[in-house]
Image (tube, rainbow, N blue to C red):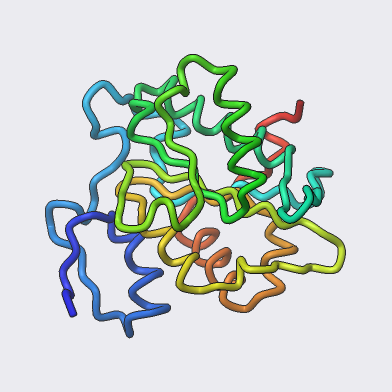
Length: 209
Protein backbone atom coordinates (compact mmCIF):
# COMPACT_ATOMS: atom_id res chain seq x y z
CA UNK A 1 0.00 0.00 0.00
CA UNK A 2 1.28 3.46 -0.92
CA UNK A 3 1.36 5.51 2.27
CA UNK A 4 2.52 8.87 0.88
CA UNK A 5 0.13 10.69 -1.43
CA UNK A 6 0.90 13.65 -3.70
CA UNK A 7 -2.60 14.95 -4.45
CA UNK A 8 -4.48 16.23 -1.44
CA UNK A 9 -4.13 18.93 1.15
CA UNK A 10 -3.73 17.13 4.47
CA UNK A 11 -7.20 18.18 5.70
CA UNK A 12 -8.84 16.40 2.77
CA UNK A 13 -6.61 13.37 3.18
CA UNK A 14 -6.90 13.02 6.96
CA UNK A 15 -10.60 12.15 6.90
CA UNK A 16 -10.09 9.40 4.32
CA UNK A 17 -6.94 8.12 6.01
CA UNK A 18 -8.67 7.84 9.38
CA UNK A 19 -11.95 6.39 8.12
CA UNK A 20 -10.60 3.82 5.68
CA UNK A 21 -6.85 3.37 6.07
CA UNK A 22 -6.18 3.24 9.84
CA UNK A 23 -4.56 6.69 9.62
CA UNK A 24 -1.66 5.25 7.63
CA UNK A 25 -1.73 7.72 4.71
CA UNK A 26 0.51 10.79 4.80
CA UNK A 27 0.59 13.88 2.61
CA UNK A 28 3.85 14.71 0.87
CA UNK A 29 5.26 18.07 1.97
CA UNK A 30 4.65 19.49 -1.52
CA UNK A 31 0.86 19.21 -1.09
CA UNK A 32 0.31 19.28 2.69
CA UNK A 33 -0.77 22.91 2.82
CA UNK A 34 -1.42 23.88 -0.79
CA UNK A 35 -4.41 26.19 -1.20
CA UNK A 36 -6.72 27.20 -4.04
CA UNK A 37 -5.53 30.80 -3.87
CA UNK A 38 -1.94 29.63 -4.49
CA UNK A 39 -2.90 28.79 -8.06
CA UNK A 40 -1.78 31.18 -10.78
CA UNK A 41 -4.33 33.99 -11.31
CA UNK A 42 -6.41 32.90 -8.28
CA UNK A 43 -7.09 35.41 -5.53
CA UNK A 44 -7.62 34.91 -1.82
CA UNK A 45 -11.35 35.33 -1.21
CA UNK A 46 -14.06 34.00 1.06
CA UNK A 47 -14.60 31.27 -1.55
CA UNK A 48 -10.97 30.18 -1.95
CA UNK A 49 -9.49 30.43 1.53
CA UNK A 50 -10.98 27.25 3.01
CA UNK A 51 -9.84 23.73 2.19
CA UNK A 52 -13.08 22.15 3.43
CA UNK A 53 -16.45 23.82 2.91
CA UNK A 54 -19.84 22.48 3.98
CA UNK A 55 -22.90 24.21 2.54
CA UNK A 56 -25.91 22.94 4.47
CA UNK A 57 -29.35 23.02 2.85
CA UNK A 58 -31.17 21.94 6.04
CA UNK A 59 -34.22 24.13 6.57
CA UNK A 60 -33.77 25.91 3.22
CA UNK A 61 -36.71 24.25 1.45
CA UNK A 62 -34.49 22.35 -0.99
CA UNK A 63 -36.01 18.88 -1.00
CA UNK A 64 -35.10 16.14 -3.45
CA UNK A 65 -37.36 15.19 -6.36
CA UNK A 66 -37.74 11.80 -8.01
CA UNK A 67 -37.03 11.74 -11.72
CA UNK A 68 -38.09 8.41 -13.25
CA UNK A 69 -35.40 6.07 -11.93
CA UNK A 70 -33.09 8.71 -10.45
CA UNK A 71 -33.19 11.55 -7.91
CA UNK A 72 -32.42 15.25 -8.31
CA UNK A 73 -32.44 18.41 -6.23
CA UNK A 74 -32.77 21.66 -8.15
CA UNK A 75 -32.28 23.93 -5.13
CA UNK A 76 -29.04 22.16 -4.30
CA UNK A 77 -27.96 22.44 -7.94
CA UNK A 78 -28.37 26.24 -7.77
CA UNK A 79 -26.12 26.36 -4.68
CA UNK A 80 -23.54 24.07 -6.33
CA UNK A 81 -23.36 26.16 -9.52
CA UNK A 82 -23.21 29.37 -7.45
CA UNK A 83 -20.17 28.11 -5.54
CA UNK A 84 -18.47 27.15 -8.83
CA UNK A 85 -19.17 30.66 -10.18
CA UNK A 86 -17.67 32.25 -7.07
CA UNK A 87 -14.51 30.17 -7.51
CA UNK A 88 -14.20 31.26 -11.14
CA UNK A 89 -14.81 34.88 -10.15
CA UNK A 90 -11.90 34.47 -7.70
CA UNK A 91 -9.61 33.46 -10.57
CA UNK A 92 -9.78 29.66 -10.37
CA UNK A 93 -9.79 28.16 -13.87
CA UNK A 94 -13.11 26.50 -14.71
CA UNK A 95 -11.15 23.47 -15.97
CA UNK A 96 -9.69 23.05 -12.46
CA UNK A 97 -13.18 22.58 -10.96
CA UNK A 98 -15.13 19.34 -10.88
CA UNK A 99 -18.70 18.76 -9.74
CA UNK A 100 -19.50 15.24 -8.57
CA UNK A 101 -22.94 13.90 -7.74
CA UNK A 102 -24.07 10.29 -7.25
CA UNK A 103 -27.30 10.73 -9.22
CA UNK A 104 -27.56 10.74 -13.02
CA UNK A 105 -30.59 13.07 -12.96
CA UNK A 106 -28.59 15.63 -10.98
CA UNK A 107 -25.70 15.38 -13.46
CA UNK A 108 -28.13 16.14 -16.30
CA UNK A 109 -29.71 19.08 -14.46
CA UNK A 110 -26.33 20.56 -13.48
CA UNK A 111 -25.11 20.30 -17.09
CA UNK A 112 -28.22 22.20 -18.24
CA UNK A 113 -27.43 24.95 -15.73
CA UNK A 114 -23.76 25.00 -16.79
CA UNK A 115 -24.78 25.54 -20.42
CA UNK A 116 -26.32 28.90 -19.43
CA UNK A 117 -23.07 30.16 -17.87
CA UNK A 118 -20.26 30.87 -20.36
CA UNK A 119 -17.67 31.12 -17.58
CA UNK A 120 -18.43 27.56 -16.44
CA UNK A 121 -18.28 25.73 -19.77
CA UNK A 122 -15.02 23.97 -18.79
CA UNK A 123 -16.25 22.83 -15.37
CA UNK A 124 -16.46 19.05 -15.45
CA UNK A 125 -19.68 17.48 -14.12
CA UNK A 126 -19.93 13.73 -13.64
CA UNK A 127 -20.96 10.86 -11.42
CA UNK A 128 -18.54 9.45 -8.85
CA UNK A 129 -17.58 6.62 -11.19
CA UNK A 130 -16.82 9.10 -13.97
CA UNK A 131 -14.18 10.73 -11.78
CA UNK A 132 -12.50 7.49 -10.67
CA UNK A 133 -8.72 7.81 -10.84
CA UNK A 134 -8.90 11.53 -11.69
CA UNK A 135 -8.38 14.75 -9.77
CA UNK A 136 -9.27 18.45 -9.80
CA UNK A 137 -7.99 21.40 -7.77
CA UNK A 138 -11.53 21.99 -6.43
CA UNK A 139 -14.29 19.44 -6.12
CA UNK A 140 -17.90 20.29 -5.28
CA UNK A 141 -20.05 17.33 -4.24
CA UNK A 142 -23.82 17.64 -4.59
CA UNK A 143 -25.25 14.92 -2.35
CA UNK A 144 -28.88 15.48 -3.47
CA UNK A 145 -30.74 13.57 -0.75
CA UNK A 146 -33.07 15.71 1.37
CA UNK A 147 -36.23 14.12 2.70
CA UNK A 148 -38.32 13.84 5.85
CA UNK A 149 -37.67 10.13 6.35
CA UNK A 150 -33.88 10.69 6.23
CA UNK A 151 -33.32 8.18 3.45
CA UNK A 152 -29.80 8.38 1.95
CA UNK A 153 -29.97 5.65 -0.72
CA UNK A 154 -26.62 4.76 -2.20
CA UNK A 155 -24.88 7.71 -0.58
CA UNK A 156 -24.19 5.07 2.05
CA UNK A 157 -21.68 3.43 -0.31
CA UNK A 158 -18.54 4.33 1.67
CA UNK A 159 -16.12 3.52 -1.13
CA UNK A 160 -17.88 5.85 -3.57
CA UNK A 161 -18.03 8.71 -1.06
CA UNK A 162 -14.32 8.24 -0.38
CA UNK A 163 -13.58 8.40 -4.12
CA UNK A 164 -15.64 11.61 -4.44
CA UNK A 165 -13.94 13.44 -1.57
CA UNK A 166 -10.42 12.37 -2.52
CA UNK A 167 -10.63 13.67 -6.11
CA UNK A 168 -9.98 17.13 -4.60
CA UNK A 169 -6.47 18.55 -4.41
CA UNK A 170 -6.96 21.94 -2.73
CA UNK A 171 -10.64 22.32 -1.84
CA UNK A 172 -13.52 19.94 -1.26
CA UNK A 173 -16.98 21.47 -0.90
CA UNK A 174 -19.91 19.36 0.29
CA UNK A 175 -23.40 20.60 -0.58
CA UNK A 176 -25.92 18.57 1.40
CA UNK A 177 -28.86 18.44 3.77
CA UNK A 178 -26.77 17.67 6.86
CA UNK A 179 -29.83 16.54 8.79
CA UNK A 180 -30.80 13.95 6.17
CA UNK A 181 -27.34 12.59 5.39
CA UNK A 182 -26.32 12.42 9.05
CA UNK A 183 -28.86 9.63 9.47
CA UNK A 184 -26.06 7.42 8.11
CA UNK A 185 -23.27 7.13 10.70
CA UNK A 186 -20.43 7.19 8.13
CA UNK A 187 -21.82 10.35 6.51
CA UNK A 188 -22.48 11.86 9.94
CA UNK A 189 -18.78 11.57 10.72
CA UNK A 190 -17.96 13.13 7.34
CA UNK A 191 -20.26 16.10 8.05
CA UNK A 192 -18.84 16.50 11.56
CA UNK A 193 -15.28 16.41 10.20
CA UNK A 194 -16.05 19.19 7.70
CA UNK A 195 -17.76 21.30 10.36
CA UNK A 196 -14.87 20.85 12.78
CA UNK A 197 -12.01 21.45 10.33
CA UNK A 198 -13.60 23.61 7.63
CA UNK A 199 -16.10 26.36 6.96
CA UNK A 200 -19.79 25.81 7.66
CA UNK A 201 -22.30 27.83 5.65
CA UNK A 202 -26.05 27.73 5.31
CA UNK A 203 -27.32 27.38 1.75
CA UNK A 204 -29.51 30.42 2.47
CA UNK A 205 -26.32 32.50 2.07
CA UNK A 206 -26.13 31.29 -1.52
CA UNK A 207 -29.59 32.54 -2.45
CA UNK A 208 -32.33 30.55 -4.10
CA UNK A 209 -33.71 30.92 -7.57
